[in-house]
Image 1 (tube, rainbow, N blue to C red):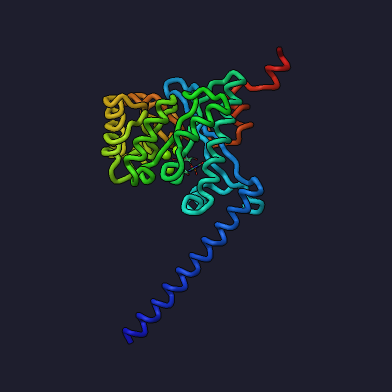
Image 2 (spheres, rainbow, N blue to C red):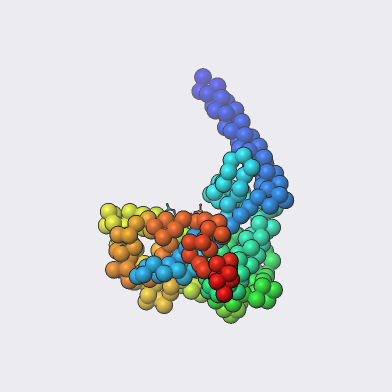
Length: 284
Ligand code: C2E
Ligand code: MG
Ligand code: MG
Ligand code: MG
């Protein structure tokens, strides 16, 4: 009887794996089609000075405008993209699109720093520092208006290689920030190993900041640590004014979250946060 059960669960296990594999392959080919059809878009979420809410920059966040499902969030497809042959193609598209946007805003008189999330393929194959240099040269974007965000999981391998890339990228004047700080296994050792310009406190510590004293302790210490190390610190996931005020009282200078603005299309971002184009052109 035990044998039958074992055999039975084995069959179920196998069919589940097969199903997952099929789903993945379907999604992969849908994503390749989506790339061909230009269905990816970048949304922009404001990053502000917490004391007065004034705009500093924007984080570029990818969306898939699916013909039937509407906007699909990156959590649903980027894990597949990042482990498929599409990875480099989409990563380059993100970097180019965001840089062009930043340059367009710069030319319109708005110095908006744009932050891009790096994909693993960008650190582990090709020469990212060279690509960034080419991008800056072709767009004419001021280097300090570009920021790259990296998560711990993509720093895991090739430490020497990544270290070299970061140094060369920073020599260009582009900043590198550690994203989702505190969620990985070895966040502190990465601060020691890599030349980082700043860190972003993960929203999981910020969301319940007011009610959870452990979160408050973690966030407070992270802010203190950042200052001691001379790093910029950005808090993510600020959903209300009280949280923003509390962060200010702990010495945090920059932040982003639904309270200041959700990720939105570039045109909506311009309307809400920038003085771009038509009105000013017409007024002149
Ligand atoms: P992330 O880089 O940590 O981005 C912040 C995420 O937090 C975004 O989710 C944003 O919409 C969400 N968020 C912002 N403010 C709030 C808030 O106040 N409350 C809550 N609950 N959430 C907030 P999103 O856009 O779904 O992106 C998820 C993740 O997908 C990103 O996390 C990033 O790791 C990845 N991602 C997004 N765009 C790209 C991209 O272009 N390339 C790569 N490689 N990864 C991307
Ligand atoms: Mg990010
Ligand atoms: Mg994050
Ligand atoms: Mg994240």
